[in-house]
Length: 244
Ligand SMILES: [Fe+2]
Ligand SMILES: [Fe+2]
Image (cartoon, rainbow, N blue to C red; front, side):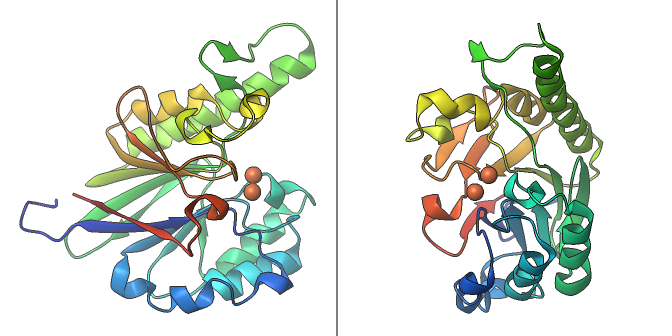
């Protein structure tokens, strides 16, 4: 466990890099220095434009083998071509990237075991202005999808055996980090159920993407620090968060 004399744990994160051939090389120069600045790199989904195998190869080429473990979740764009299994395999085989969906991984540093639980998440909205499991089968299926993914994320966080927990999603767990997006689309940008899942464990940090026009900082009702790391928001190759 980190004590006060240990150096802080350093978490690098970026989302919504939307890779394709024309994006190759945009991030790599900054990533060459990553191992000096961070212990792990988190990718918060929308790694590709349309979720093709060819685009996944670009992700592996750009973000793979950067000298620290790379842990990712997929985003809605990565699902578009219905090739999720192929995308995940390319990221793992060619990039050495661990892709989470309702599960977790532990990254060992000399002083700390960093537990990362991840899930893409889904929409539904936030307290007082959210979809409910009522009415048409399609609406019930929509809300049940979010509910199920939030349940898996919460369980993955609670079951982690580590020193420091980080939650990684694509969709937002709180509305704070959506400020700047039109309020009408908040229900398609995230769900309070993800925030409840994060608050169900002693989580140190939650990062997400998806909201390109959102803002960077927020917190769950339980006080967990939430950061929107979508590339259009952070406007750099990655942000680094120091914890512990
Ligand atoms: Fe995106
Ligand atoms: Fe997205």
